[in-house]
Length: 143
Image (cartoon, rainbow, N blue to C red; front, side, top):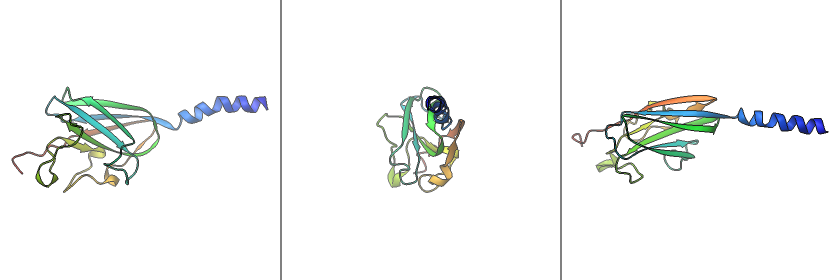
């Protein structure tokens, strides 16, 4: 019995660590070096763009920023990124909901006539995963 408990105690941490991974998110195309870049992770279509399961904000101090999520449960996720230049905590929009600030999605999923679809932004986190996201900027002269 003692051997069984000892074996379980030694193996359990290995099993738990095998179920987590790391995610490195590189955000490119920051045109104004002010405010924050907010990276939000979602694990279901029903919560996508509503309630992130994980979220981090970093200063928009360069044209690219890197954010790491360590010990993330392995599985499927989608990312939404906002360059919150005025630090009000949200994506500012113009008439008809046209974004005024830079934004982007995992897999560089396209945002045609609205936000990207969850399925197109979906990716899998394993031991070590990287996502490169290029911000989308819509010129104000268009609208």
